Length: 364
Image 1: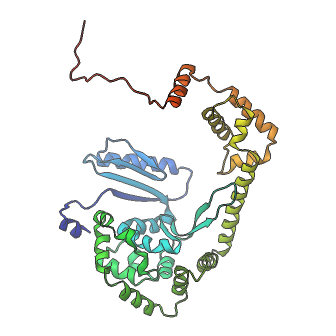
Image 2 (image 1 turned 180 degrees about the vertical axis):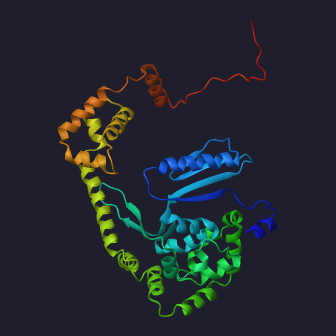
Image 3 (image 1 turned 135 degrees about the vertical axis):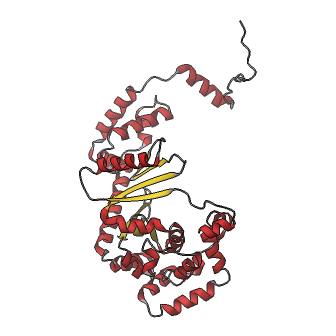
C-alpha cells in the first residue's frame, strides 16, 4: 500500500492509528477503559477532546494524528485484530459477500436477514452472526489462513490471487459500482486489484470453478447467485454449516413477532386519532403530543411503545393524549399568525441585513 501511494505522490499513505484492547469481563470494565484512555492520551501528549462512539474512543495526538482505541471482550480480540489489520482486503471481500447475503463486520461473518413488510409495519432487517472464529471463516469462504491471521501483510497481487481463488468469487459481482474512477482513486489497493482483474474475469472464474469442482458450499453459492436456490433454503443451509439452524429459526420468529406487534399497535392507535380527538391542535402540535407519548412509554426494547399501546385500553390512551395536549406550552400567537399569513401568500421570511463589522462605524 505504501508503494502504491508513493507512486501517486502521497508520502503519508496511512490515516488514523488503531489500538485494539481486549478486556476480560468485569464490573470494573468502564473504569479500566477510562484509565487506559487517559494514560494513552498522556503518553501521546494529547490535549484534544475525546470522542466516544460505542466501544471506540478517539482523540488527536500532539502532532494532530488521530488515534482510535477500540475495546472488546478478550475472546473477540483475535478476530478484531484480523478485521482491522487489512481494511483494503476486508473491503474487497465485503463486495464479494454482499450479493450472497453475507456480511463482513467487526462482529464476525454474518448472514443478512430480512422479513418483508406487511400492512402496518416496515421491513425488518438484522444480521445473524455466524462465527468470529477465523479458522472456520477461512474454511467456509475458501481463504488461506494467512489472509486473516492479523500479521501477514498482503500485496495487491496477493489480494487479487486470494480473492479470485476463493469460493465466493463471482466476476459479475464486481460491477460498475465498484469500478468507478472516483472509488478507485480513493483506494489505491482496490484500484490495483481491479486493474489486475480487467479482461480476465472469465478466466479467473473458470479457474475457480475447476478448483472447487464438486464442492457443496461453492455449488450452494453458485445456485443462490444464479437464482436457482431460494433464499429460505440458502439461509438454512448456510446457518447449518455453523450449527446455527435453530438460532436462525428463532431469530426469524422474533422478527415476525416484532412485526406483528407493530402492525397490531398501528391498527389500534394512529396519529390521525390524535387529530380526531383534539381538532383544536395544529398538525405540528399534534406531532409533539405523539413524541411525548412515545417518550413516556419507550421503556426497554425497540417495541416497548407498541406493546404499551396493545396492552392499554383505548379510552386510557385518549385520556393521556388529552392530558399531554393540555400541558403543551402555549404557542407564540403573533409568530403563528405570521407563519399562516406567509403560507397563504407564499412569502418567505426575510432576515434583516447584518452590518459588516469591517465597515461599521460608531455613531454617538
